[in-house]
Length: 395
Image 1: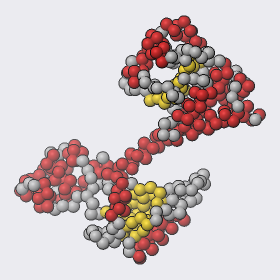
Image 2 (image 1 turned 90 degrees about the vertical axis):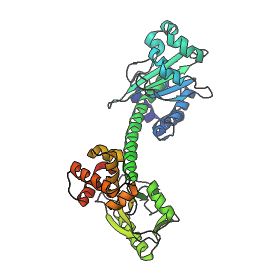
Image 3 (image 1 turned 45 degrees about the vertical axis):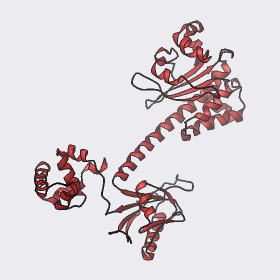
Image 4 (image 1 turned 180 degrees about the horizontal axis):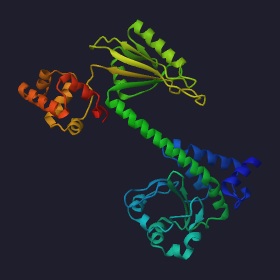
């Protein structure tokens, strides 16, 4: 109890001792837990805002993760209980420019009366046009600004029938504010990591590489759409009771050995264990190439069902996807030349490409000579190598 009181007091400074917060310690702890778990919710911080609204007897609590401007709408989370949230779009389009309760002192909780005075607030067009029809009179808020440039706004509103926000209310918000600031930074970092993950995953998908991750027991944890399609076909590789299995007995034993080897080498910060195997198929030409790679972890990586091994699966028979427009722009080709270049990169001969594109063979040869001139090569094999090593497959 004493340690918690000191922690809360340090979070707010000396202006508000813990006794100023009229909230049991268990409920305060529940509120802090909701704040730190907020970045993991489908609607970030919805649970924390709901708790804060109930503790403050408020009608609305809003967290603006991105304030509105002429160039962009606000990104906000609202807690309103059973009240309808009907005017968010109007605020984004118009009323944000009339809002006088902005540019608050950073990381400090204030009421609208403290900032502009009750008379000025009631005379403001923002109050008369936007808030009064919603039965909102009292407002309390804080602006959060982080070292890495994030700016968020916390706003709490009460109806006319309720009393103004008290020092106890301000003390509670002041106590949770530094925790909310830290959680906002965590959310920003998680969003950045997730954006990078989706970017790289999308690139791998476009390259038609199947990816499968296994947990510490060797069970399949995740797979991308390309791998899902391969496994649904069940030609060479398939899922059996949540585990990856090769159809051929000898190849399956070798695959399981490589997975076990990768699992044994994924700890201790050592270099990743990498190996490969080819998998025979019954219903298609060519084999599947499978690269097995351990996912190293540090001593801080704990818990079950964590990614431990990655498998990259490539079907050499599948045609890689690339944008004709990207080929055209990258090498300054005409649309017809770009189509021919892509057909050759996907393994067709010149005659096969001409038939596929429904053009004369002499026309295909003329296009090829023009492609050679523009790219600066003299042989078709060199052209294909240049195309395959270019960035067109990443788009």
